[in-house]
Image 1 (spheres, rainbow, N blue to C red):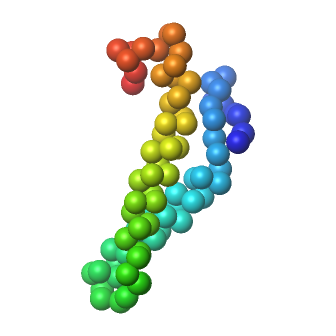
Image 2 (cartoon, helix red, strand yellow):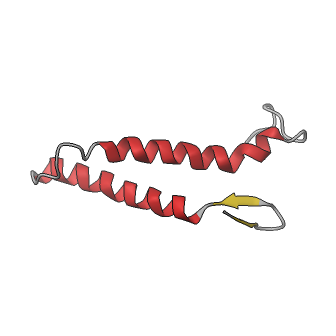
Length: 79
């Protein structure tokens, strides 16, 4: 996990998770292409969609965790 930021903001970024999301997204594209063009990928290729959504949820929760917990930003000010 690295900490870096734009314009002085502290952000949590896990590069490996972004890479896994990319692989999962490509798997989803290949799954849809296989359904359209009729080539087989296997019976468990649909799990890439579930993996992508789970991983994206974790990345978003990790990214907004400190913002939601801070006193400055409540649920009303969340954008």
